[in-house]
Length: 117
Image 1: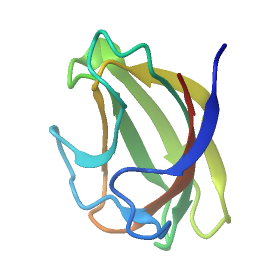
Image 2: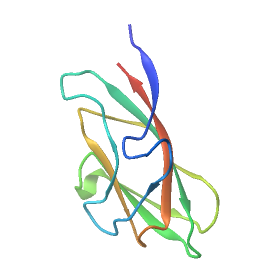
Image 3: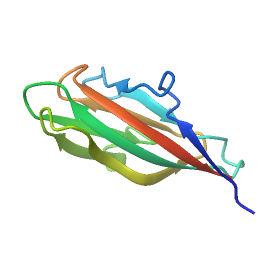
Image 4: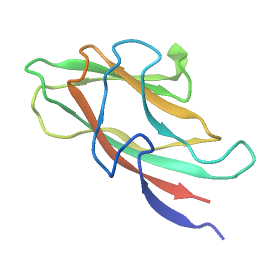
């Protein structure tokens, strides 16, 4: 039978936001999925972005790889509160979610992981 546990993003300190400092690939690490390829763990990632700058900024999520085909791009409006950027998309096998933005240290990422084993 599957078990579920809720956890903070691995790059978060005590649940605080992760600041996207990188402006190009390879991005700032946001979360490392649990387990290796044989662990069977699945991380369902819920991620919200906020932009503290005065201009819209493009955010790129590198989903498990830096290859362009694994990227998700979204424009984050200025000072608009939290924008959902990952509605429970899964990552597994110890792969890493990284992010970079058009401007350094202006996008903050909040979120959590539902780990299914």
